[in-house]
Image 1: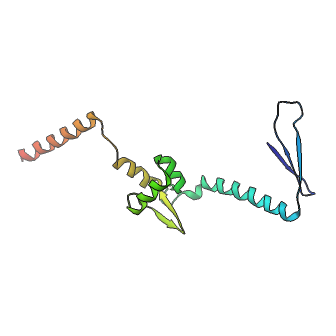
Image 2: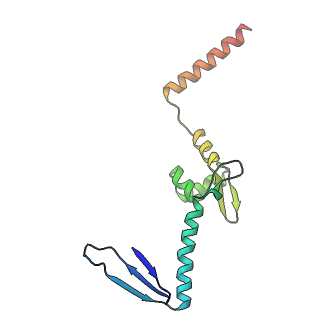
Image 3: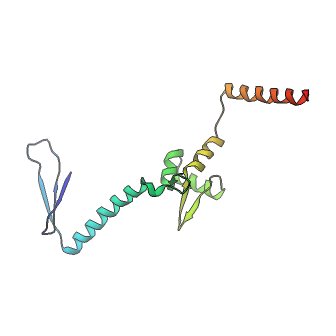
Length: 138
């Protein structure tokens, strides 16, 4: 979709179609409507831009994540993540009403809930046995 805004504060929208000439739709806006439309369009664009920008980086180089990003990362519902917050299972910061998470904290939470394979369990058992043998020899 192509949006063209002219000096006369008119908004033209052209949609792609299979015909040779795309249909043109003309909207005439008042100055107030035009300003509101621009505000909404640019607000959304800026929000999307800053969501993925370097401003989400903390001083230690870690990335800040919104609740929606954590929901997608963990593949959990909003209500489930809220219950994790109440039980303090994942560390978070409060910025107004919205929690902010560090990516490293979310990854650490995932690692704590990791289910080990049989090989990993056997390797852990062997490491424990070998460290006990060394202690017994002393």
